[in-house]
Image 1 (tube, rainbow over the protein chains, first blue to last red):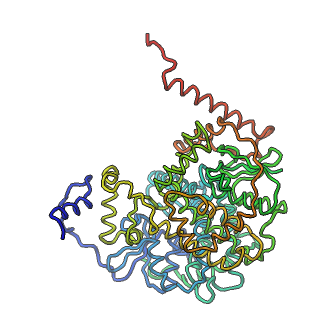
Image 2: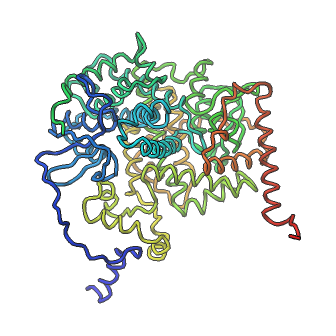
Image 3: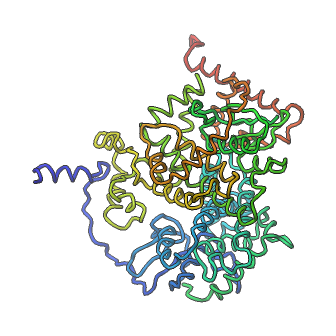
Length: 276
Length: 357
């Protein structure tokens, strides 16, 4: 039987002493109704036929996952992800007003794409930890890359763009530095990042071999991630050892480029569809 | 003979010669390849151009630093553990090494540095003994700070409530009462949390998300290994060396809260057997003389300053660019740093003072 002090103890467990017990009222304007789910993503680098619908690898990854799992969504371009649970693009806004961040989107579609070999989990982590960091570096930390891409990802006044770009570069740089395999104090070395990315591409070329998709007949989670990364490397016109190696004539990574182009043609035939 | 510069070890009596899994992996790789080498236990990362250990030196010249570059170099010198693997196996080896390096390391760091009892009772005192005074005052805290920073970036903290599936709701996103409670809780002053829950909030529970992630990684590794002696048959590969480097640091030391070790011991006996099998093949390395503590303390201070001020001149160029004695610049920096610390100490403590007239 609960003691008389129990409710007080429960209250103490949940109360925050940094907040007043504010009285809240319902908002005057109700949020607008949306008939279909909306995926909020970054803008594309250029809007032309045959180019990908967004220039951000994570946004393209989420979009590819949803397309592979046959989830019909509208694409919304934005740069202020206020409604995103993790404060970043991409995020999915559903008619029920629930919002899913990139991680939750992947979990949401995982059930439909679950027939993957066990090895693919290791390859997914390989791509996540070796390809995405190199692309992040190119986008935000590398001077040429950030000036080419920031105008699309941060469509603000040039001064605001510079400030936000600097903040983002610091944040990404710190993140990449502490995420390295060698512990303690290593400085951020772009050459190491690109070597890691090329090693990951080597492994992925070996896995793809002559197959249409990594998982066989149907595209899966690994296909979505590799497609997004390779597409970004190919589409973003920033000189880097990574891009040179991938686009070199007779490159050993040509099967991955063909794979990315194949998915782009098949699943993203034109950008006009479902754009808001 | 090659010289490997690596972090020292608080568990040398257990046959582990570094606390850094990347250093242990390279040591295992070199031993399994039968490379002739000697081990320099150091805390001076300035030896490497990108300030990371392990670093491989040949004829007083830095050859490479970092796990992959050293392995690549050794491969080009004919010491290749992967020589018998086909292209498919090589691809798998790269993927599984990445899995270990990126997933297992978080659980290891959490267990060593974020579980207060483990750090306070075992890791810190042993590290202090390894590095000796005055480095014992600096290096263990720096490493703990690094571990906290790395895990914080990945959203892992020791304060996550871990009982009965609440961690899962914290992972699932902010919709729901549990996440609102979590966000409210994060605003409660830490001193209040400490008074209310005591050190129990740092309890090392197997349901913590970091251990759930480690378990899924170990599950994949265990399935890959199966009943085989090594991952790719009867001879060890680079993947086996890396698996040993990370697993040995979890399995062999005894910590006050041994959740991670218990998970592996209970659920993955084949991984424990692999670790023991490789350990039985390793011999005690030839040790070089320990470095002076001056170099170490200069390196520690340099890292503190570099962390606080992101100044490009504190990072190093490639050693190949330095003409003449490759250690000359390093010596000069060591002396300058030592003088700076010495005079700083004197001025700070008021040993020299003026009358003010």
